[in-house]
Length: 500
Image (cartoon, rainbow, N blue to C red):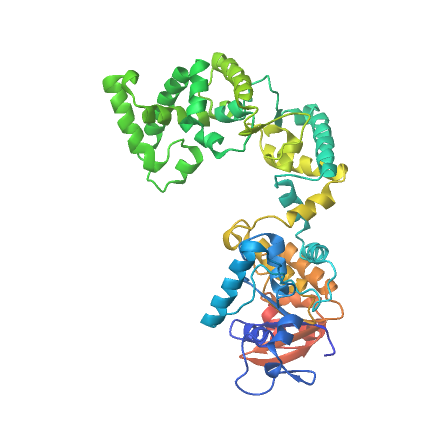
């Protein structure tokens, strides 16, 4: 083929999608011939087309798992290296193989290595994955995913995080930034954190000590009793419950106001009404443990700087800080919470939160976004970016990519196609969900990466064909114009109509 980058454009009924699917072997011609050089494409073995042709469409599927898992999926052509089993595992594997043979199923082992790098010529799949994600402009997202990761890190990265934390603390000490963040101080109440977060002063490791479950935790309730806080917190819970019922009594259950402002879900509102009626009739002394738990759960969600209800008051703030110290004393050796320590990296916190080591101020506009930009800045200063981008490959995309935006899903699908290192790259409007500037950037990046290969790109926006060496204009399944964009835009008749 004379031109290696070909744009296919046409109106809605032009069949440009069909061209892409035919080239990708997702559809077979019912008449005529479809050849690449001397090869008849329908007759080539699927193993060849599967490894040397890559395809991405506007709704490419994203698999549950990590970004790297999604990138590598297209390289899993065959079982490359078996797993060596021993003892009981070997006996189970032998039984599995016998059952598979008897039932006519494949005996291939899902636990074996399936990443076939030989057929692609890729030496380092991870490095290649980073490269193709940069091509589709996902490097900033990778950086962000790395900052949002938590868990163990290499000692070198841990040291860089603590260096970035120190720089961050110096940076936000300036008058123009000091109002954006409330830095953590073990001896001070955090106005921009919930009551529960103030009590923990760290990140829960044991789910029973997660902020939303503290009210149900008997050990925590015992601590609050010992510190003289339970009665006041239950009283605060009554105030909050009355306010929520008054504010949301007439709101339909589907109202978004519940999710944004209410401490009580629509499903629980009637239970709290019943609880308050019982309180009015019999008083607090007659309340069962479950009712006390319900009341306690409400003030634990309060953020003093955000909700402005006067809860907790100054006296309760002091007692909550004292309870924080007692909490740490009682549970320090249990490993149920990783307490915030200015001199240590906390594995249970995200890397971003480890660097910030504070809480955004609610009353400041765009404080979280501005602080995130600042965290990125100091992370780059200390040289963390390469390590964080690599960690971003381990980002869990959620069920079918639920944690990714549509734009990210589309770019990931393109990157997965590039990951195969194909000879022919077929793309069927895979950038339809991108904003115009990002779409142009991704197209330019892919075309630059694919120099020397063949690219056939079905475009929904004909003006984007300007970037391609050759343009095919289709009408009703037929090529009506073929040539260079600038010539067709001036001398043709079909392309100018599409551009109008």
